[in-house]
Image: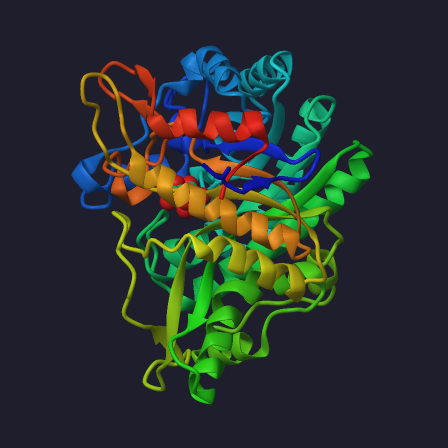
Length: 449
Ligand code: GCO
């Protein structure tokens, strides 16, 4: 028998997993935590499948020690989590809540004890409701409030956290939260969307500046949501439409970080809809404050066609690959493709894959969860990533989404992304077959082709 070729990842490559505060913590009203937009939104009728919410979620707030032990048993080398802003500032600003800071200090200490490097996301969608009441991301002041919150965390956690992510997926929380209304705060208003996008990017820039001013050692970057866009055919119109998709969904959130500004086509579109970007002098310089890495989240691809009937000039073409439970295509090649593209587009930045994963709802049979679809697709994603690295992309870490099944936003608990099964009735955690697969990848620093 011939040995299978082995895909060896580079020396020092880190393997991890990711979660987010509202999706796992629960304890929504404990230790003086304030309410977030997600507490309010998820309790409104019709917003979340089965009227589910994150009041308890994975009860991680009480079980973080066991969860860190579990991470250690799986062999994780790094763990990406987010801080719930309303635990630190119950209203978003003003009074600091020491109990909230204490929780994250204990969590980080537990990680460090197990030799797991913390990667801290400052904002993963749970904006304090107190700030939403003032207009949320549509109010320019939010950028300064965010920088103050960030500065406090640098001061109180920066002695033990050295990897910082400013925002998770501004594309998603602005477009789905302020234009489509499918996510908190559930608004549909194009003017507010333009404001939210710009203020989110400004908040990112101010938080980067605050990090440099803090004098803390370490690195900081942004995490964007991505789709690998593919032209559905070779016509010049379709190629042009694919660039427009990249403008509206990718370059809008990356360009300004790398000093390229917002794409002109996007600015023109919003202006033509009477929703101009509220850019003030100096803003673009703040947003372009140099970062240390780029966080890449990616789950799938999308084929693109031109569409002149839509103001944006493009639309998604019909899927040709099997669909996953989330409704998008099973396209493992998309990770390597996107990483190649983004690496080239922005001058080969250092990249962390801050999220990649698969929803696989396979149920336990005799206590075992054989989530083979997840394993198969992860193999494909990782093989593609290996190829992109071989082609020169500077990728240093991979965080699987997610450590355990959790609250999947408007899908509630109906979509399971975990490598560990969460029994939401008992809070038992059962590692799935894909967890064993991933542990083996970590142990060998690679996988069979
Ligand atoms: C996102 C969020 C995660 C999701 C994950 C699975 O990418 O939308 O960062 O919180 O749970 O992506 O859909």
